[in-house]
Amino acid sequence: MTAAAELASGKGHKDENFPVASVLLKKEHRAPIMAFYRFARAADDVADNPSASADEKLTLLAAMRATVTGTSDADAPSAALRDVMAARGLDPVHALDLLTAFERDCTIERYQTWDDLIDYCRYSAMPVGRYVLDVHGEDRSLWPANDALCAALQIINHLQDCGKDYRTIGRVYVPLAALSGRGGDVTDLGRDASTPALHGTIVDLGDRTLDLLARSAPFARGIRDRRLGMEVAIIQRLAEDLTRRVKTRDPLAERVHHTKSEAARLAASAAIGYWIKRA
Image (cartoon, rainbow, N blue to C red; front, side, top):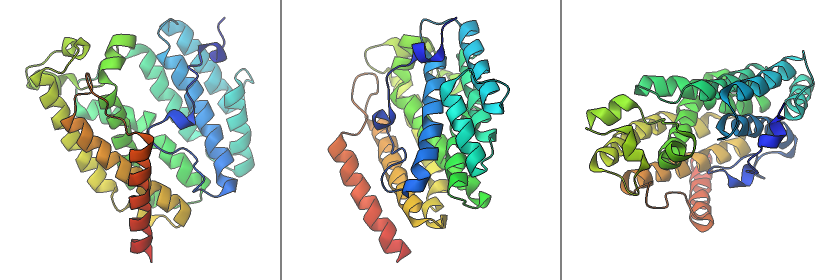
């Protein structure tokens, strides 16, 4: 049987749109966050592999779930995360929720409504931020703001990669009701440039993503750990800018992602603004 490592994409934390366990965080918090990232990356690579069958993927993800819960040692990244969580007294529910999202990816290729997409984000994105908050010992009253930000980050990624996801793995996260409401069809995602219907749909979804980001705007200031608060403020700023970009640029034909210099400029501005507000 294929091992999960054989399906690795080669993508690492430096390839993500947003900071992962950056040097802004205290050193003692970076290792448990990186353990979660490596686990999530391994599971994501399994779910998104274009050549493995759905049954094969589900078997590998089941081995990861069994390893997290301690009934197996079959998967190395899952075992490493399990050990970290046990040592730090962290709840494994976030890792298990994340696996639920990747299991869905093996069998669900379409989402009908915005609410369906948010429900997917409940498992694919929100647990990541919740885990980071738990690592830092932050209050769970922050979860609603975290959930709004994490859902926004996930949807931004879906919109940026909507054409690639459709062409390479046949998956569509753009809600079909939103697309059909604009007179579009999923085949629009396979074109070299967005149709007016697809563009209008992306604009609509971008507006709803900005609503999520408005709800997460106070998040950074509510975090006790100021270094984590700064990282969240930076992520918030990057997300706001990317959402506005995806509304004005064509993700099928143009670059939406930030360059390193653009991201650095936005990060510096967000960090300065954070410290002024916290002073």
